[in-house]
Image 1 (cartoon, rainbow, N blue to C red):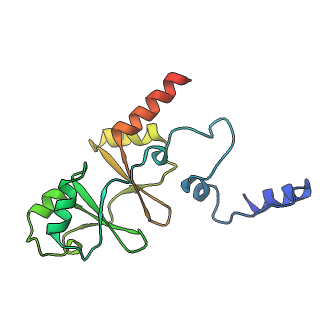
Image 2: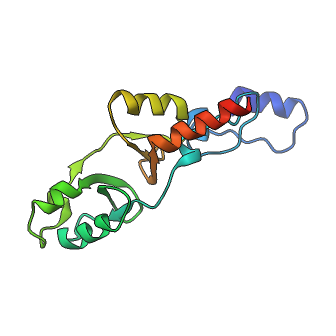
Image 3: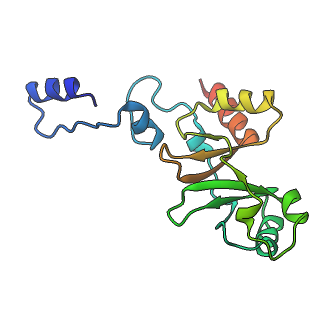
Length: 164
């Protein structure tokens, strides 16, 4: 809510009005409720999965490779103690290195990410154009939420189109 809108609501008699300083995009990115005709379009956040392998930068390659091979994804996401996304390490890179090497030494720094409020249809198209299967979803601060698959994004968009 902008300061001007907060002031107007107070003038209309609303007793508890808060000024959300970070703004609307931050509000949307955190999945907070909105109103209106387009309040519930499918988004990356609506299909995000948190079952991707995660590891710390100091974990060794052998252990992370085991986790990746047991998961549905050909990579692991490297996070800090607070869940901040630091990088990605692919199974192919893990297989090329000594099992005792820390993944922080071989991870890809700063992988591309999207926010949870990104429209599912738009994101699915973007992934298809680049022949990618997944998008990494983070908060505006960079904390990992999970992964949205192109298949899930397309399904969410298609099922919404059938209902409309």
